[in-house]
Image 1 (tube, rainbow, N blue to C red):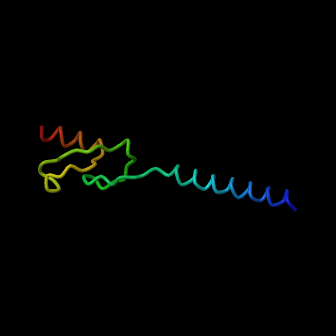
Image 2 (image 1 turned 180 degrees about the vertical axis):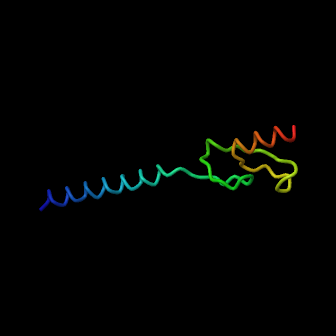
Image 3 (image 1 turned 60 degrees about the vertical axis):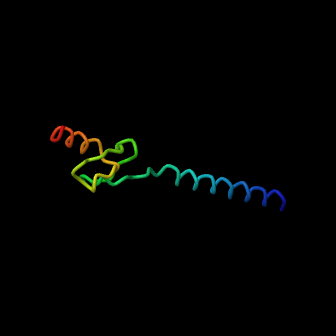
Length: 73
């Protein structure tokens, strides 16, 4: 009986660790206020577009930033 409870505890711990790993693997997505698409953190960066969104610095996708720079700078 003692071994059965240790085996069950081991299995429960393994499942708990696996569930934690599953949660950690889901990337956080950011919605670009320019194109309204969702991107991972590495695909956005803080940028201030002076004529949009009240001159606030927001996380825009790299494509929107490049487009804004090409049209306004």
